[in-house]
Length: 500
Image (cartoon, rainbow, N blue to C red; front, side, top):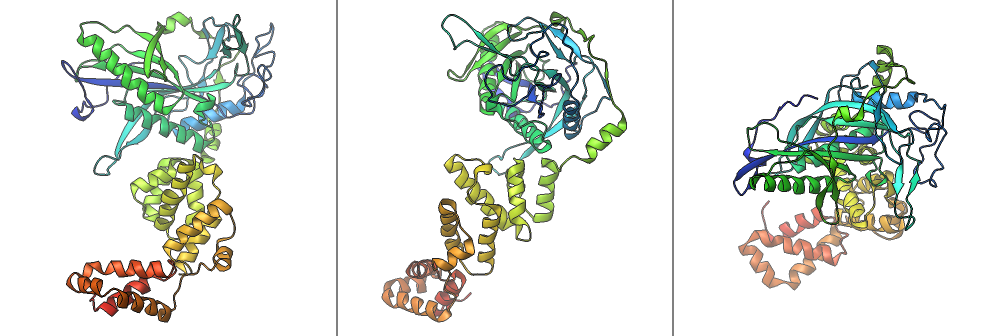
């Protein structure tokens, strides 16, 4: 990989040091587990959470004479992902052996791709922000390649005081290694990149993106330099499995390297680990280069070849991706860029919103989904898949507001009832007497009573008409929030002689 600097140095991204400004350079290698029922070269299950060593075939355990057989679905998933990244699809690729010893690597090598990956260069557009003015900055991050490889097993050192154990359930599981170019210049950009990449693969259905289960993790390459100078020596932080930890690891590592350089030292190219408990990185081993792994084409696997028709069929079946969906929400529904960005961040949220917005005002639907539903889910620590309020129920609440059966305030109370108890919104309004009062006679009586009981406040409003809102609030309070707010406001102004 030839390193090319495509970014213009920007002072707003500099890191101040004791001897001047510095710039951080970041590249990411994201390992995304392919969504498939079986492994890359065997028929063993990929189900997460099964008992140790229960998802293991003779191929995964590297028994003598066992030969790998490529899983076509994994190939399709890699191509789909490449198309989603607007990348070059290589119709001929080669599997190589990457040789190294580790107890959880039964073969003594990993089947991967080196010089000829299945997917070439692509790009991701990330949005960083909002800034203090509420603006987002769109930045293009280059993708160097995507290649397929098999995962290793897992060493477990906490099962016995005297022995280590090996779980081979993950051995042979298909991974997509998605390698970015060194185009990121801040921890915020790196976090936005992983967030966007995870969103894309989830939309595509090629990886579930569950970082807590290990199905998506990142190796973070960090270096620093004086603005305008050549790239510095990088350190790689291995297997970071949280977007928040990625940001913390970058911040610490950049500061560590700046401190060494300002003290007159030099950076050793090495592999490091991030300790989330201490918020720091620590040395793991000196960094290997490609020749250390003695790559050579795997003699048990023929070159992987497919034609244009194979790619075209997969492309025709791609779903609408986050960027296209966001553009449509802004263009067709009149949403702000911020609201559209929130709604497309996860496919499940976007699907929920579209079900609510169907045939209704998109802006109103967006406000309710973002502020009320997502706010309640966040407070409860739940995901959109766990929502107790269905799209049909929320849509029915919006219909009741539009038909003036209930007011906005009553709608908030109704939402809380459905959140905790469930039920049909229309039936709840009827059975619990929640309809708003639209009878102008009843509202006028309440207005007259409030005005008569508060002559001092009337005098203040005569002097300062903007205080009329106090009377509106008192009338709403006296009617239990059931009075039509527009009717109350109109009657208050008419009774107090306030011109529109």
